[in-house]
Length: 253
Image 1: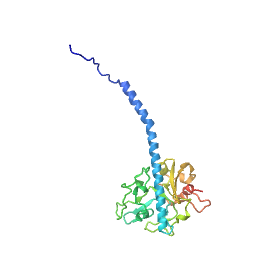
Image 2: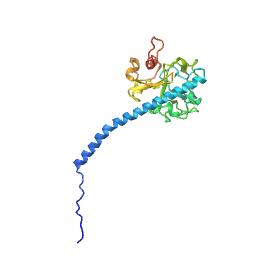
Image 3: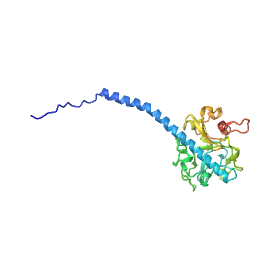
Image 4: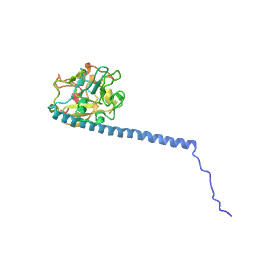
């Protein structure tokens, strides 16, 4: 007589059991995603701070080579336009502003100029709207190259390729914020690190500053893509005592 093994048909999940499992998975995902998002932003914020410290080191090297001068400022008469590395349009193409650090081979790592939390391709690394390497030949399709950080305004770089005269001096700016996440307006801050900005200082350090520390009603009203010299004072006004504007609020007093 042959041995026979008793067997039972495998029991399948019922529809209700499947729905319960799916519901539990959905709840777990809902719990984990915000945690993962916070962890990713924390890592990005740390990388951003590292970028600003490396920029600070490059400024120090540049100052040592060029009689204490460093390439801060803005383009033309718009304090918000403080992020251009290379200017390129239908008639002109030239390195400007912080692009001179790359040309001097003081900061060759391209991603150091870009915040990893930036979501707009105009300020991301090597996009159609933000080319890298720099465009060197004018054309109808040419785009400026922008870093995703701004520098302290107050020194005008010309749309004709001219440089500020005189240039700012690093030794005079040890406690001042000289670089930061884009301060074009509040939307740009909230689209990136949400609750504040990283700022780099003349002494080479870099620190986090909460958005709640900004107290400038005019700056708060600037909407997305709202550019113009009428906003200069909300960025920095050194004609009053004490000086005002969001850059002044980043300074260490």
